Amino acid sequence: GEDVEQSLFLSVREGDSSVINCTYTDSSSTYLYWYKQEPGAGLQLLTYIFSNMDMKQDQRLTVLLNKKDKHLSLRIADTQTGDSAIYFCAERPGGSYIPTFGRGTSLIVHP
Amino acid sequence: EAGVAQSPRYKIIEKRQSVAFWCNPISGHATLYWYQQILGQGPKLLIQFQNNGVVDDSQLPKDRFSAERLKGVDSTLKIQPAKLEDSAVYLCASSLGTAQETQYFGPGTRLLVL
View 1: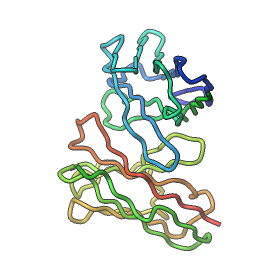
View 2: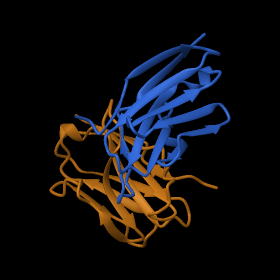
View 3: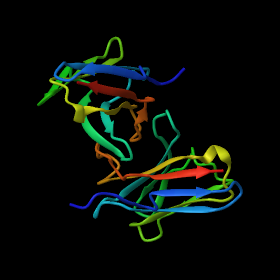
């Protein structure tokens, strides 16, 4: 199976919160990342969390890490139409500098 | 600060033809990466350079793909000959050093092989 798994689509109403979930397999992962990719653009690093943290908050973004279950989530508060994009979860295994990406979750924000 | 630059942005070729992509990383970034992103998938690393040396090219299909970073700055990725399954977005990224957690991505080159 895939090393990093995400659901493919999420649809939310503007102003609601979005929660994008991700599971990974490598328990030695040191960093876990969330990237955003808008149409026709490269990947933009949104936030990352060290594996020894449970939560990280950055303005409208909240990352939760459950290391026991190898589960990572990204919560976007007050979701706006400009948040519509593909969100990639990635893990950086211990001993490697290269992240392994999931297939991405397409977030669709509707009025 | 200028970001990672890539050209061309789009390329359409026929199978068995050759194609080359160019990347200019962020100034001062020692590490440069080439990724292949097939439609509906996440990026997969093809090759990683540290200055002008190759750190990891284990996922590069060396029978048809080649890459170089001769002066430790710009890099080119070449495919010769191209196959239909090479249709993808080729992303270049750079980081300050290998231990740096942040990779900065360029906009990518979209390749369509007919």
